[in-house]
Length: 165
Image 1 (cartoon, rainbow, N blue to C red):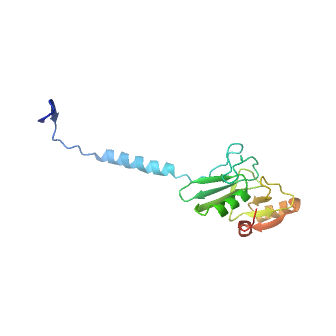
Image 2: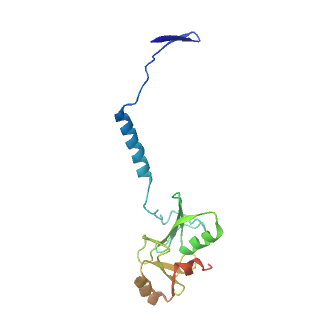
Image 3: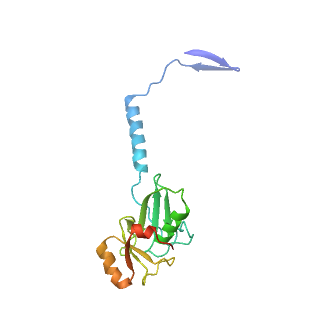
C-alpha cells in the first residue's frame, strides 16, 4: 500500500490491478446478447382499436375490418384507420422509408397482411372509415367470394398504390 495526501486527507491506495475473471466476461457477454435478442421484436405491431390515432387523418381507429401499419427499417410503426389513409400518408411524407406495408384482413379482423401480397376489393357496397371503400383479403379466392357480396372491383397492390382517395 502507498499513502497519498490529498488536501489534508490521507488516502491509502493499492497498486493491485483488478482483472475481470472469465466467468464475469461470460456473464456480461450473455447479458449483452440477451438484451439485443429481446429488443428485436419481429411481431407486427397491433392496432389498438378505440385508442390508436390514425397517423394521417388523426381520427381514432375504430373499425376492426379496416386499418393499416407502416414499419420503417428502425422498427418505427405508424398506424392508420384505413388503407386509404396509409396510401395518402405515403404520398405526402416522402421522407418515411417504409420497409413493411401491413393491412388488416377484412375477412379476419385483427390479422395484419403483407399489403403488397394482399388482394383488394375497391368500391361497390364497401364502407371503409374514410370513404375510400377499400378492403384487403389474404387470398384471391376470399376476395372473389366477397366481391360477389360487395360488388366492387378486385385489384392488386400496384393498382391500390396508384389510387387517389
